[in-house]
Structure formats: C-alpha cells, structure tokens
Length: 283
Figure 1: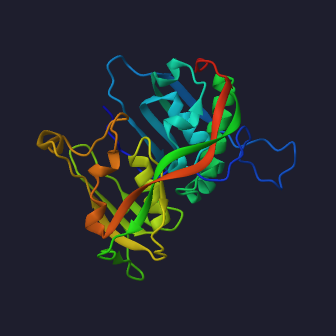
Figure 2: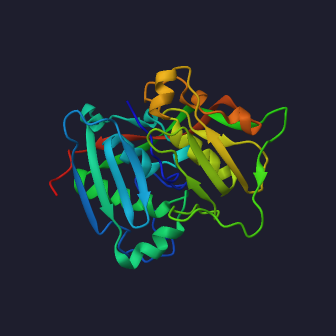
Figure 3: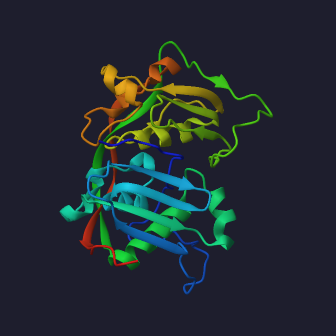
C-alpha cells in the first residue's frame, strides 16, 4: 500500500532518452551533472511502499521500486507511468531506499529547478548508469492520461494576492509558488501561488498510471486546498493514500470542489526499452 508524501512535483521535460540533460552549449568533455553522494540499499523486509521527497540539497526515497527512479530519470512527472518502461526485470519492483546528496557548489542551482527539474533527471540518469550499468533506447507509445479542464460552474480558485507571504520551510516551485503536502493522517494538500502547470504536475504525482495535462486555459497563480475523499471511512481515518493498483487514483481527490474536472484522454509519447540493467552496486 502506497502512502504518498510528495514534497514537490518532480522532473523536467523534453529529454532525449539515453542522453544526459546537459547544456547543449557545453563542451563535449563537460562532466554531466551528478550527485556528490549516493546510497542505495534494499528496504527492510515488510517495509510499506513509501515516498519520494525532493529536499533542498538532494533526494530521499524510501520503500520504492527502482522502476520509479527509471521513470523519474527519463520522463516529466506529468507523463510518466509504469507502462512507459519496457523490458525491466522483475527485481526493479523490489523496494529500495535511496539517499542522494547534491554537492554544496550545486545546491543553489538545484533549488532553482522546481517541478521542471532537469538537473534531477540528469543526475538520476548518471546514477543509474554508474550504479546499475543502465542502457536504454526509445520507442513510440501512447498512454492513458487525463486532461484537467474547467467545469461548467467555472473555477473556484482564489487568485494569489500580490506580495503574499507563503509558508516557510518548503521547496518552492519553479513558478514561485509553494505546496504544503498532506502528511500521514491528513487529507488536505495546500497550494500557494501555484500555476495550473505546477498543479497538474502534482496531480500526476498522485496518480501512478495516469499523467495529467493542463487544458484549463488558466494562466494565473492561485491559492487553494485540494481535499482527499474516500468511500472507505476507515481509509479516511488513516489519511490520504492510494495504491499502484488503484484503477482511478485521482477519483480520490476532490478537484470538482475547485470548479475543475478530469477527462480521460490518450497521450502520444515515447517509452523507454531497457537493453541492460544490473542490481545496484554496493555503496
């Protein structure tokens, strides 16, 4: 059972599969971005399926399958799902704990990335190449997803006032907003100064199989609260959670209360095919 605790929406876009996200103007011999320190080890037996957190100076993942690191490394969050990886061994679904730290000299640039984190993708690709000997190639694909639309009632979002002070202690979004994620035992996620582009990235993070695209046409920044709802009272007592096998995980989140709606669509895209991968080398 997955208990989500996403601090920020991950990942960037437009990354060529099998290539590092280095600056195209960089010299051919430029060293690709890499974490300074990486620890990867199997989770303890019986560990619950866990979470991925983007920290001010790195990444922490607990109880996650390596397929999630693969997806994070090659796809924007709003366009990744398990179906986008082909040829992965069964063991990539085994649970691992990952701690990765950014070098002090790179922290300032890391903190600028926000939800479109190309630096994170480059570092994950480098990590997987070094620690798992990963080699992949791309293939065309079509995946199920959602379009986020404005409902007939119209949006019910509060426009962010000029000069508003956001809650401290959270990694800011690339658009300058802040997301205060739900914690274990809670059922609400708060958004401050967030654009719809950042919001759909977060919705995609709450859905394990259905990425979300922004089709609202809303260009402003907003303050609002997204509430989790469940038909299972016992589940509500435990807080917001979904599982990878949930056929419609976003149905648990009350976007309708925001004057928005989700519509199923097909998204043309690419997937990656694993040519070679090994279990992570020892720390």
